[in-house]
Image (cartoon, rainbow, N blue to C red; front, side, top):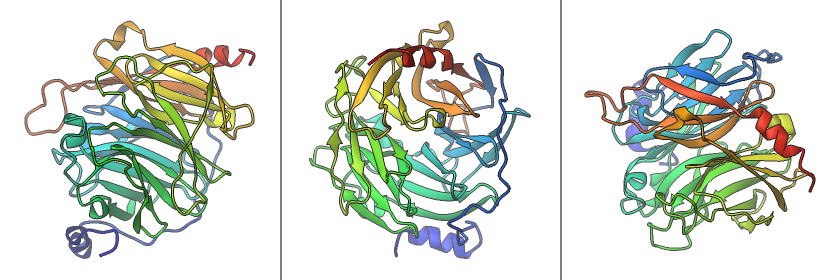
Amino acid sequence: MGSYSLFALLLAAAGLFPFTSGSSTYHGKKKECHPFNKPGNMTLHQYQLYPETAAWDTNRCVAYFCALFNGSIAEYNPYTTKFTVIPFPGITHAPDQHASGIDYNPSTGLLHIVIDSQRPFLTEGADVSGDNWLIRYNPSTRTEIWRANLTSVTNGLWGGFQDVALDSKGNAYVIGTYPKSVLKVSNSGTISVWYPPQTTNTKVRGYTGAASLYGQDAMVVVDNEGVPESELVGNSNIYRFDLTKPTGIPIKIPRFPNTQFGPGDKIHFPPAYKQTVALIADDYRGTIVLRSKDGKWKEAEHLGLIPNDYPIFFERITPSTVQLGPKRQYLIGNNFPGPIVPGTTGGNHSDFPLFDITREVERLLKKKP
C-alpha cells in the first residue's frame, strides 16, 4: 500500500495521525536569526531529552533535537529556553523506537525525521527486526505530511537506519548501518532500494551519518565497515554519492593526511562555512574537522580532532556536532541512560551539555594545506 503501513493508514483515517498534503515551498515569514548565547558552553534542561542530533531552523530560528529514547522531537527556542515536545502517535514512548536522525530543508521549511528500531543497535546487527520510519513533518503547522515504513521494503532483512540527506527534488535518502545501505524515499513518500546491502551479514557495520551537499545534488556519508560499535579507535572513511544517479554508487573521498578516526557517527556541514567544512562526531574522542576548499568533497584535508576531554564528559559519548544559530558550533554530549525510569523509555537525566567548539574549529581552519 505504498509507503504507509495498513495500520498507519487506518489510524490516519481515524484522525489519529494528522497526515496532510505538503507544500514544496516554504511560505512562512523568514527572519534573520541573531546570536542567542555568548561564546561558551551551555546546558539544556529537559527531562529525558538524551539528544542524538539536532537541526537548526533558519526560518523560525529554533532548534530541533532528536530525543533518542523517547522517539520524539524536542523543539527548542534558545531565546526563551523553552522546549516544546513534538510527539508521533504510535511511535513516541514505544519501547522499541528511537529518534535518531533529522534533516531540515531551508527551502521548504520541512523536517525529515528518522525513527529506528533499537534492536540492531543493542545487538550490533544480530537482530535487525522492528519497524523503521521516515517522517516528513511541517513544524510551522504542527502536522505530519507522511510517514514511510522503511521496513516494508527491507522485509526485516537489514536495518539500523539512523540518518537522512535530501536532494533538490525533495527526495530523501535514508542510510542503514547493519549492513550499509541507502533507501530512497520520493517526494510523495514512495520507498525504493537505491543502494542495496553488499552482504547478507547484518553484523557488518556500515553507514552511520549522512549530510546533504545542497546545490550539488550529492551527499557525504560516514562508513564504519569493519569498525565494531565498541571499538574505541576505528578506521572510518567517508564516501560521496551523486544523488542524480538512478542507483547509488559510493565514491571514497581521499583524506590528506589519512589519519585514523572513528568509530564515526553523524556528519555535519556547518552553514557558516558554506559546505567547505565537515564536522564528524567521533563517538568516544570528540569531533573530527575536515575541509574541502572548493566545497565539492572530491577530496578532503584532515585538519584534526577536537577532543571531548571535558571533566563533565564522564559516561557521555559524542553522537553529533552541529551548528546552532548563525555561526556557533556545538558538540552534543549524550548520556547513557542508566536505569530506565519505570513507565517510561528513558533514564532520569534532565541536564544535557552542549560544548561550544567554535574557537577550536577556527583554530584548525588556520592550518595551511
